[in-house]
Structure formats: C-alpha cells, structure tokens
Length: 232
Image 1: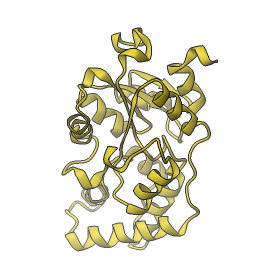
Image 2: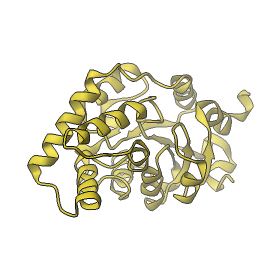
Image 3: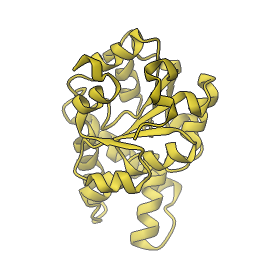
C-alpha cells in the first residue's frame, strides 16, 4: 500500500535514497563469495545466505558480528583490518560488478521529475564509490553519497539514513528509500522513512516484509512500474 507520500505521485517525493549493492549494482554475489573466502582463510565458514542477511553492515561490524556469534569473543582491531583487507582484495580481483539493467534509465526518470538522487551504502571501498560516480555521471554526485566512512554505526542502526536526511536537508516524509537487504530496510524504517524493498537476491520476499518494508518488488522492472505506472 502506498502511503500519503505517494498518493499524489512523484510531486510529493523530494528525494530517493538508493542503497548501492543489490540495488544499483548486481554485486551481492561478488560480495558473498569475497566474504566467504576471506573467512575461509581462517578456517571459518561464513555461509552465503548469512552474508545476504547481514548485508548493509560496515565491514568492521560484519567481522565483529561473526566473531561474537561463531567464536564467542570480540575480534581484535588487527583481525578486523586483516579480514576486511582480504575481503577487499578478493572482491577487487573479481570481474567488475555491472549495474542492473534499467537502473540508469529509472534514475533519469527521477531526475527529469525533479527528484534528488542520493546513495546510502554500507560500503567503504573507494573503488566502488569512485566507480559509482563514473558509471552514473550526471546522476550521482560524490557529495550525495553516504558511505560507511561517514557514520560510526552502520545498518541496521538508523544513523546512515539519518545522516543522509541531515546532509540532504529533506525530512523523512519527503523521501523514499530503496533497499534490498533486511538490515537496510530496518535502518531506513528506524529513521522513519517509507521504504521499498527490492528483492534481487536469494532471500525470500517474506524476510523483507518482516524487516518492515512498506512495499516489496521483484527487480528493477517492477520498481519502475511502482513509481511510473503511466510509463507502462
């Protein structure tokens, strides 16, 4: 169900806050394999489904979560740095993730409608953040990206989306978030923002609904139809 924000169409929406991995880029498969292999170097198993369930956390938070749950202790700063460096190295050795088909066109539609585009991501990898601006030149600006570098607490804490609200100058009632991850949905909803869950991965739709999504769609095509039904 659309809330009051969407009843009047895009004229009521001032900004869209996009998550990056799994929403803009078809990259979650890469991240899952990279995390799995990084932990495997320590003889530890980080199942792919668990990577998807924890998507959106900062790298340090992901390592700490794993150590607490699997090893019953805190990870040291050296362990965090080592595992995240290994994960980043593996990820960067893989083929460059490509944007989802249709996502750039959807952004252009938002821009034409006067809707601001922001990105709120748990990533801190400069390779990804710089590539985002290159791949979406004219659509995404570096100063309109909130990354793990900009917050102390990552998703599911609301800080990333509260930071985006503060930086953008928009109120929660003027924004729609697009998220593919349960922790991202929880973060956006905790910040009081209407949230569209887009399922582009291996998790059941029910997980996004249970995380608090106001709407759940399958893929970029359904996302476009949700916002621009008149274009269909």
